[in-house]
Image (tube, rainbow, N blue to C red; front, side, top):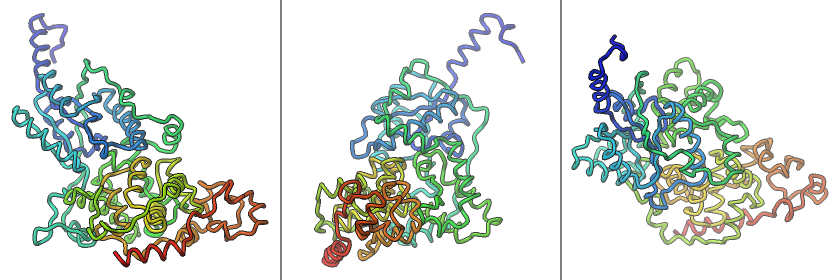
Length: 491
């Protein structure tokens, strides 16, 4: 090996110029904040040095901009990604299209750009525009699917149409083996933009200090954390998952939804990890049920890709004239966890405190809003978008329409969750409810989910004054159920 100090001045200058003019590739991080199994990054690294960028795109229409909880999670996930890149993540803020073209103008060594697809309607359309403009400038642009097991463009029915029923979609994709996770060279060199002064703090993602602290203390962030969550889930909670996932006090879910949304882990890594332990784990029903939840995520993306109006328009047109009502007082009570129905209030307060809500409880609170309160599903969708760290456009809209009955393969209209029975069935010891509603801790278990039926003596002993430190029910369950059934039947 020739040492630099032994070279003549002209040889050093030539070496320096060769380095400065060598080609490197830009990789654009979006919802794929990881190094391993990142198709675009892997391919970019094969060509040599990589110029990694993240852009907080301020040109995104307000409807598609991330909610406050997602921004908090994003901040800490980017922090971990930057650490993995040894501080070489180049962060920018502004119009993504303009920034990308400005970077190509300012850094002539960059000859290529790679990224992984986002399937949100606006972002997908914008990607096509950027790709076309880059092509006119003869800049190589390579785009990959890094976030889903199956590209929604590739899955079709025999007649060329699109699936609208989950079971048929699942049957189809099970015939298509997902690719294996990809490895990344350990010797990849990342390039820092020394002229860029934008930092992570400049993105202003942390809006509410007290809430930031709560979410930061509740979650762990980044690629390594996601892998650890997966390992813990597979070793400790996969067995018994099919039944246990319905009980919020059990903590038997994977808690990987936010990691999947931000791409700290890929579905391919999860799929492969599950299949690796499949033979040694005697819990095939649990495994299949967990994989079906991964496929539900795929199905939601598939629906939104082929029906891009899903986030704001009823999938079933007959619901366009449904007699929704809106009572601001009821909606505010629902948002703050003050409906007087304990399992609903516990769920909404979990959301406010942690940026998360157990899946069973999500269905309960959603059913309560759209069927017991008769408030349009979009109000609930918007609140979840603002407050969930795992807020995902496709999952959120498809799930709310599913509960409301107006979505693809939706829940039957007569399926109205009774919050009292749901609480008694799925939180029988009240561990979950009491965690987020400590005011009810001293109430005898038979009245935990119906405190309005407890005697004045019992309420006093428990330190509860209905209407003061815990509300009376804002709606009668029997009346509201009958009202909803009447409206749905007429629809």
